[in-house]
Amino acid sequence: MKQAADRAASLTRQLLAFSRRQVLQSKVVNLNAVVQQLLAMLRRLIKENVELSFVPSRDLGFVRIDPSQIEQVLVNLTVNAQDAMPNGGRLMIETRNLRVDAAAGELPAGDYVMILVRDTGHGMDREVQARIFEPFFTTKKMGQGTGLGLSMAYGVVQQSGGHIRLESRPGAGATFRIYLPRVAGSAAEPRPMAAALSLPRGTETILLAEDESSVRELIGSYLESLGYRVLAASNGAAGLELARSYSEPIHLLLSDFVMPKLGGRELASELKKRIPQLKVIFLSGYAGHTVAPKDLDFADARFLAKPLSLDVLAKTVRTALDAI
Image (cartoon, rainbow, N blue to C red; front, side, top):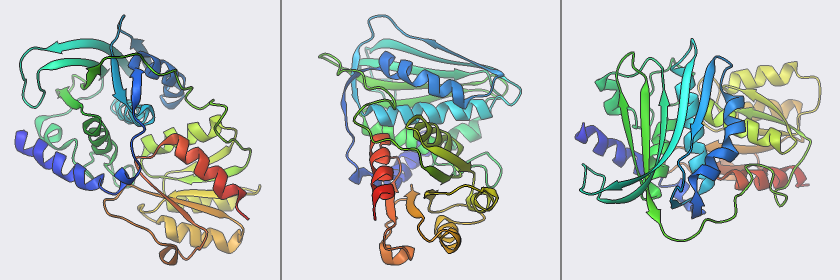
């Protein structure tokens, strides 16, 4: 298990090497406030047959994290939990203060704030658990996910100085525990998830093509909360079909660069034939993957690396739409 964890850590560091150019916007926060602001979005993401509950700890300590990144981690865990409960079930998020008196494996002694995400799904055997944080490892069918969600979560938690652990058994659900170092001080003012007055808004139509379901749901809900109309597709081919059947104008393509069936560049090329004025933003989570305008065939295309800050996404979308 340790060898597999070390391999996952190494691969994740490589995967995040490029995206680290976007410096974490860390601040002192109370995780109860972060989760509370996220709950409405999480309830929109899950099916009606999944019961979501939040059990916040009283007098919870503070941690230093990037709120946008931990929100994305929780969305990834929520969507994965839902996928593990196709017939419904229960999903619980809980926060606790925790003191570790003696080092436990890779978890050093110290004071932590723990956030727990537990589901009643089908669970995982030891072989799957040994690889669950590896980039590109997935138990989903071809075309239903890239296997980047949990590796991104692993990387974000590590970048924040924390640790993430999984407990699971076949037929007995799964429990993820995230340990973040407790810090002194007072929390920054809560940041509304998507209602900050300083964030640019709009009413344009955006075609979102993203094969990682958790990322697609997060970005789609976020942009809709800012006033945009979002057409969401699980891959490039589905995005092309969706655009062809949509009778109203489409103003922006926001697409993962690498997808099964049809990649982002190919999708953009096809759409540009029909919509010459279409604005384009590409997303990618692949290590070392840089994109130059000459490689995109679109001089005005923009590029964002995952994991991304939702605030940066909002500003990039508005900038792209306003460009002449």
